[in-house]
Length: 120
Image 1 (cartoon, rainbow, N blue to C red):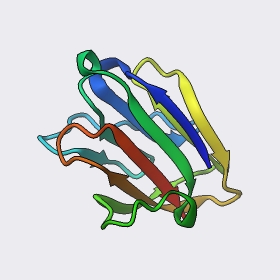
Image 2 (spheres, rainbow, N blue to C red):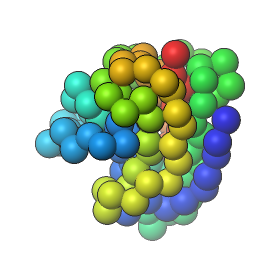
Image 3 (cartoon, helix red, strand yellow):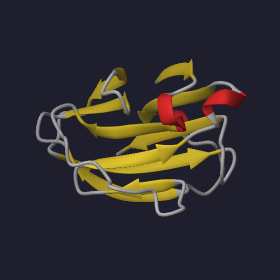
């Protein structure tokens, strides 16, 4: 598992294949917004402080609650990358597959201070 605390620009992180650029156009009032190649996840308001972001296998990052999102993304390069809206990679893991199931857990439904991103 990898973990990092940050106050991401626009209070948003993106989970993508390392080469993907098919990003969600809008959050539509939701905490999570997916496309086939990316998932956007809202975080704690940037001015309110940092969000801890965790990335790993499901069993490493499961927060013991129901995930706020379960879905698949394509990973043609075999790498899951967590990025800022300025396209800075903050975390990445080699998954070795062209498609993974992502699960996202959050400690708050609107402005989480902890976001766990698991794959299987």
